Length: 323
Image (cartoon, one colour):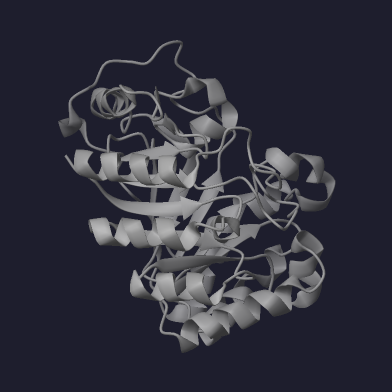
């Protein structure tokens, strides 16, 4: 059985972005050491993990990021990382290039005034410079944009910026009222009409900027036995949303002797693809959107985990949103 990992390598970050779901800043108490991280990585690879997305915080903020990334690549894993684009030592950049790591660079607007309002003074210029450096080194990267009231009128402009910087895709995500975003909700909250119109607005961006034709939609639960989320302390969850909303609902502690076995049992024993997620994804060749629905997480709404159901029931059929 092969599966993917999304791994919060650290909660530490040099920024204090107003939209940050984990409210990153300081490391979590008990974050894994380098030796522990490499041990967990290798054990999960032996168990079938074949790709890993490193998140944070800011994964590049960890001094051992290059070592962890190199180890993952040497094991044979496909590697990705989410970053602000404002940190990249020569050693980290070399490791990213050698591992053929795909980056996702966070942007919050097409202009310094917009981006810096969310991420801090001077961060727009640093992120643009980082993207140009990635492009010059031949490192593939995407843009990741959290849509809020601050930037909702700049979606086409930020997509054009990404295209001009040589990004491969633009990922849009509707802001969620959680983490640091909850503390800044008066600034960030979209109006009901803006929320309702996001799929059509993003479909128009895909068409006008990239020439894509329509977005395919899917609102099925993401817990489908194909991925695990790991926090910086080595706790495994069936989904990042579960970790964000209820940190006590981890399925395994990977620092324990039976941690991997427990994680694999949960991965194989729960499948909720027939349920509705609180998020809905829309995607074309170059653009995607994660929209938020006003309903609870399908898994957390259950009093207890449920037994596996037949995977032949499939996921919900996608529908197309055209311009």
